Image (spheres, rainbow, N blue to C red):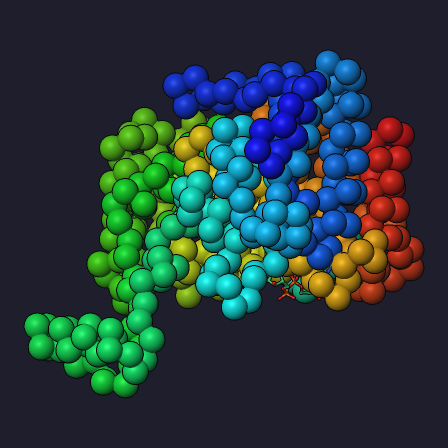
Length: 415
Ligand code: NAP
């Protein structure tokens, strides 16, 4: 069936929601955006791997009915639009989607297609698991000690896009107002950006992080902030996070005072420790005491930095999966960009998108297939059959093309 710019597969059914709970049919229709540049290479391989894992785990009883939707250069070529409404509507309607990287159009007035998708679909948390796969080259001595899932707020903070360029009449008006009304002492030749952080934005993010910890058996949730300096934004994020934990999860959450006063520093069975760390200290903590952290919730800018820093510790962006998740829609994506110099060469590492696909399978409740693929990917790395980016850092490894790496994983799945 054709709906606008999209061909809807007739061998699948729609995912639905019952009181906010996802209801997944055996053959869910899942929209995908192939992506620009290397997106074309990594998506083909990812799809083969995901299909092979699902087939091995469930034979014919379950499968994904893939539905291509368009964004980026492919949409521009086909429809003369960077982000067609039909694409956004389909992702919203089908509830779960996956995408490759997209080019940021230059000189079009569009800030970023990725940011656009997150805003329109209100995907308020960016979820980035950072877990080490043995054999992946890492810059630290004990990369296996880091196993965290980062929940970064995706809609507020200095990313809200409320800013004025130096020298414009608008910025002059803002500076005049602040200096006259509040004696702010801002230099006349400044540019200005606004950093809004709300109770609403903070609570829904921290709630999602705690719910994740509960459902995945994680025992610590850490609020990371720069509240010692930015008291009414980052400091408020910390305070509102603690308040939400006390109010909505009173039977589950304990704080550090209770941990030491009542439990001698040991998290009791069935409880989750909520603590907080100042952002600069946290960058040291993930290097020096990585095994003390499990789920991390933080505002947008700090989250941006910390997710890449943690990804680097476990093997870099080529190995880092991600998802943008709202109340009903979840969009899974590779965390790296389109690397245009490698486009269509069948060369780059598809692991980031494959691992994002595994997050997607887990989101569907299809853990068996995700686990099969995860261990098959780990085996390919242990066998030192890897793409160029890993091979150049490993001794005695065999360099594979993107498609060959996918085949190596599939062999291990079927093995
Ligand atoms: P990039 O595309 O991430 O590439 C930078 C470098 O990272 C590549 O040259 C390559 O390093 C390495 N790399 C990236 N992906 C890899 C993979 N799958 N396998 C192996 N190596 C990989 O960053 P960029 O060049 O700054 O950005 C290019 C475009 O992507 C821009 O238009 C940007 O806006 C866009 N972008 C999109 C997203 C997204 O859609 N989520 C995210 C970031 C950037 P070596 O050359 O050292 O091998």
